Image (cartoon, rainbow, N blue to C red):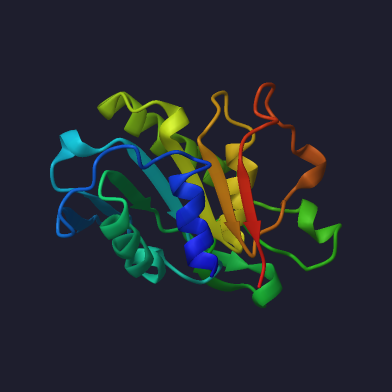
Length: 198
């Protein structure tokens, strides 16, 4: 049901699917040395949308590559970029190093304000969007940020503070980190957001 609703959001609210469907085998998956995975239309000229999917705490881009490849079959004109968070100590997990978009010191509301590394991760995601816009001329209104748990939190924190409005933001079991310093950029108040828990 959740996947169907996510696909429906991508097709209707976000309006990414007005391009005619291509063959189901028209995407290619590539990996780079930073851990980023890209699932893109084989014919780059067919691309008319972008979804950046950020994984959760302790995971990597590999954890969502099957989701991106499945969605690429249904949305063959969309490019999916799956970055991997840097490995760093996570205070809440006894300082164990793991892929993490930012440090989590605890689960209470005050601890949620201490998100060391959040601004750097926000910059990483923003640069992915900027690079895609510069290299393909794809408008930001055809881009979606999506993520699970900590990756969903990063997507919300980043997407609502950009200078440009995105097509939408998808959070799966996410939350708003560092709420006291969060400021919605003017003009982004009506950005479509799908926020799911389960």
